[in-house]
Length: 312
Image (tube, rainbow, N blue to C red):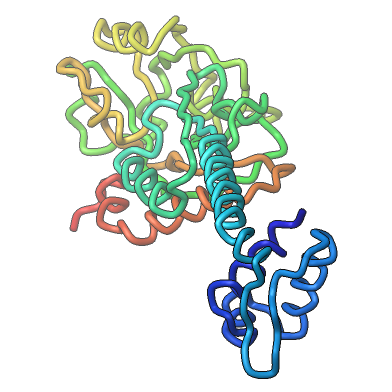
């Protein structure tokens, strides 16, 4: 038996007016009358006495009324339980590399939670061996990433670009400079954790682009790279004078070290921070997260300028 017809019965039984009951259930009076007639035919009893002046319940209608209320109420409670289950099942997987979206991370997550309070956000950090933060392997739905890298099939929306800096031993002669050029660094070995992604690895070691000959594009020779097993070992090699490391300006805040000085490198492009998704994904949740990130970026311009190291 259709609960819609029971709802029509309840509306008419409680209003005792086709006009008011039709408004209550959002039907035309003729459509409401048809639903009541079909209900009576299905049950095999007459539920209402109708005259040109009034509508009243029959004995059968009066007997059905409390049971109809119970049935419709139980069904509404069941739907509410199912709706809660659906809400609990709505999950968005967020991947990120070290630092995530920096000081924008909290505001972005707050904005998304405000827009989609029913969504459970599952966060997962990925290390340098996966600069796509899980998107390339389909492990997450959306991610904060640091391009460039070689993973294809992704759509990236830039949040900001911050300068790249050279991390040098504090006692190194270049550590006291306000800024450096690639030529200043060309004879020093780069300390880095090896990357399986050649595009990402080249970007963070100032290596020449693949296919280019004669140095790194800045007149310097091919660099000697010192390999570190972990980021901690990378810093240790810097502090012992084994070479310098290339990182983003925010490292001075997120990974400070008393024996390391971070000096901007002025003649290289900065490091972009982006929110990314797969191109083959058509997800309203993902689009809402990307929209939240862009909205926060546009709203929090003072924070963006601070991340980029720009003076007020």
